[in-house]
Image 1 (cartoon, rainbow, N blue to C red):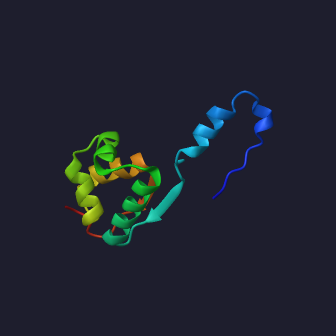
Image 2 (cartoon, one colour):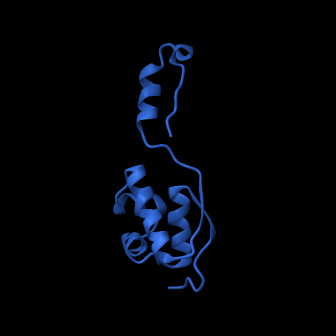
Length: 102
């Protein structure tokens, strides 16, 4: 998705606006995660989109690094940490896969 802003309205603020637009912006997303593979794929994709590595995401979400590794390899972690990570990424969860318990 491309965003166009008329910069003439913001005279003198062009550098700040360009800097803001050059950074990845959070996306509004809702998913029904019917498989753990889909969950892992979406987390990996969103980490890439936001330019986050595993340790950065873990720090932002307030979880241990192993949680992120587990989520992107297996698509599973304990439910509380899963929601912390998804919320940090801006992903609204409608449902987790049946039997999602670790």
